[in-house]
Length: 201
Image (cartoon, rainbow, N blue to C red):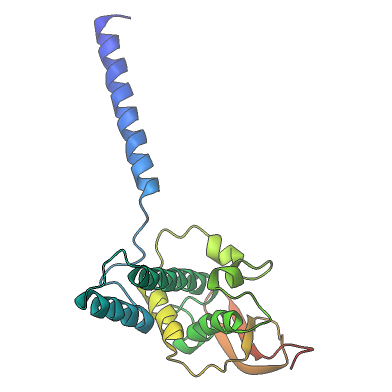
């Protein structure tokens, strides 16, 4: 290999290593969910305020009480992230009404609160045949509007009954609470939000 070819070889190798390193950094860095100020739930604000009060009276950051509040804060953040992602796939508020999108989010939370379904947002979403596809899809960004929907559901800013456990294009449960129609240039669908559990209610 002559001197010129050796220089080209090493230059190419350096460029490839740099590109590989940049790719590794990009994959390891979480994508920003949305632009703008972070969206926080009322519970997160309350947890933060409680921690600040405790710090002001002498509690250390590594005290079990403060750590418990931090864990609860991050759990709420995980729930917010998951629900926003589910909304993006199941009832994107750019083509669904606000009420429709919020109702889909509340169905997830109603299941968490029910003894007949898993008791965490992650487990409800990951249950076989439910929301796993929407949760695991690789969205590089979840729009801010989906986070606003998730916040409204978590904050209780809605009128969806607590026994609405189903959202689908088919009728499930015991009765229909409300139906939502979506009509675009590409498709037409009706989503039913249904109440109750057959054999239980």
